[in-house]
Image 1: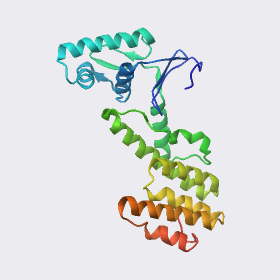
Image 2: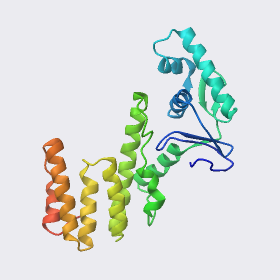
Image 3: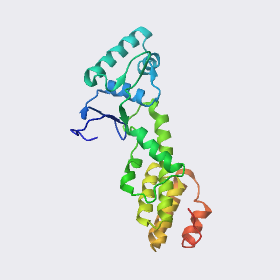
Image 4: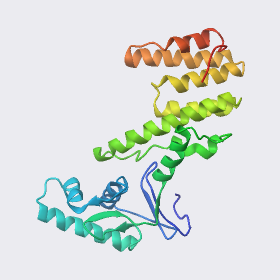
Length: 243
């Protein structure tokens, strides 16, 4: 969400970085508040106070950690009221009406991966698949969630690129595949789809550049060669290629 953006909802953005909106107004969060909110947001069912204390202040005894958590929760409430966090009971969770961009993105991506892609996908409408989760976040507690999102969005981008290629939307296939390469440059599938899209347009030179760049990257980083299917694709002009 952009600074100063107005609206009626309560929302939390995690892609590519943390931003919070309450009642349509962006609310700045301190580093400590962000750490707490992210930890809660990444757990769908909420997090117990004891777990939060142990993760946020592993070097403190239980009493001091509990005191710090109470203070931090109070600061969040001071800035957001009761509209961001639900602290009732022994757990802390996001309030029921808070929307999270990651959850919306995951639902859309899963529909594509499960075989329900749109009839014709506009890359602009799927630009969120190019956004990293907590891109500037260094806390190892988010690594698992980041890896999970990267795997999901990569699969969705591959499906969309393959569908666009089959539909004859070669620019769309190239754009989806290029975004997928940005997620995992060592994955062969998006490179192969991109090369096939160039071949379908009659652009043999661009297809060959895609292949040779991937070949060099794979050899340099992993000591491997592209698959025979990729070599045959560029060698035979893509006649036998199938997504």
